[in-house]
Amino acid sequence: QVQLVESGGGLVQAGGSLGLSCAATGRIFAIHAMGWHRQAPGKQRELVASITFSGVTTYSDSIKGRFTISKDNTKNTVYLQMTELQPEDTAVYYCYTDGWAIGKPRDDYWGQGTQVTVSS
Image (tube, rainbow, N blue to C red):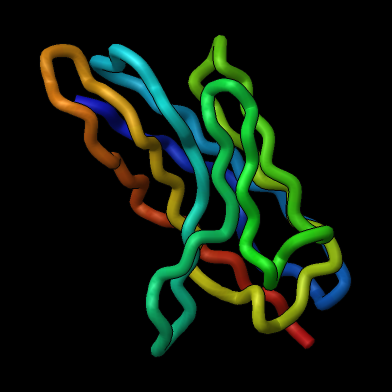
């Protein structure tokens, strides 16, 4: 199968910056896209940003201009650089990949999540 290993996150003051990274490992055949969702307490999980293998990016309106998603296809790794963080960005951030494990149909795979907390 495919495993996602997340790193980064933590506690930061409002206005600060943090970086997240996520590496996809395991029996990967191909990746269509990778990205990040987040879930704040009491709220539904929402898309933050995604990037396709060819580099097409999608951003949530709430973070546009503050967050930047990038990738390294050679490492099957996606990065999220977060700047101008606000308390409303506090959430558990989940990495995902949309792709194919060897011998499997296309599917979504998820990381365990990493906490981002922004203090006011």
